[in-house]
Image (cartoon, rainbow, N blue to C red):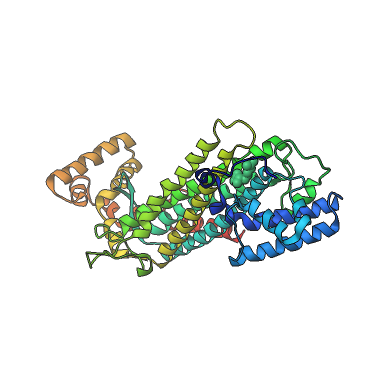
Length: 446
Ligand code: ARG
């Protein structure tokens, strides 16, 4: 018997279904159903015989889902209904008891919490690998100078190790953000029922323990309304995507003929359909191009949730595609970032030549004057004048300086001295970079 006298309009059914995308939740759906029926039996709400029949039906359905042989039917609106229908088909009346004391509202958010936990774990693991790659590439290029840029103008030279380690710390903060996502999914929503709790004496803590949650959501209304951890995951993914887009842009610049700092492995390059000479950094460009799609999903989910009255509303079904696509995108981007760095080749000569323009040592020259007693603002003026003379006269800054301030001042233009004079903690001198590498290695060891 159904409450409805007409079948669903085909367009409504197409709009309403989530099976196309929520299928991937099946391992979580099956796991929570197992925990749920075990608890129902332990509490005497269903018999042990019913429990065993349902568990068997769930095992068969899980096998079919895993091998792609699950017989989906037209009326299966979502993965929850599909699994329940199949278990009932397989077991008869016992299967009809699987949904006792449960609603799809608490079921779907429990699946999503489990998915979010697994996603955060995977992102963390992949970022940990990326950190190792960054560290190894930094160690291999410890004392290779390149220009550091501000406004994409050559500013001050740094070692490539130092520059790359900046990404190590960015990724470290990304990992911490995924840790925060894990704490946001620590409590079990299941047991909230549709919204108010259920008419049975359930043991939610037993289910929580089986599914690896540390406790239960204390309020049933909040349990089925909450999508915070989905927003948290999207935030963590968005920041990671933004970080990777900056690396992508640097790789695009570095691999251009104009920079010539880096060559990508062929495994991470594409050709052009018309220009045979081209070797394009498509993966690096996509690190840049994919980022807005990830934050787009974050903004969209805020849009879905904002202004929604408590508790469950069908709008919330929209949470999944945003989460899945953002996650899948970032996982690929992390792999691409690591792959390009690990297999790319840096060009010492080109980087060092770009970092040997004496102009890049203008601050060092000013600081030399400061060490001789001149106030910094005055020294800045003196050096600005020398830079101008050099630019206007087409002369090197080193020559203008020797003429104006004598040979000791011009000694400042030794490239290694600009780098090795950056002795402050966190600076680019080799001793400080070695300290940083120590800190980084210690983090990996934990
Ligand atoms: N497919 C639904 C979703 O993803 C499951 C929950 C449906 N609940 C309901 N009351 N219609 O949100």
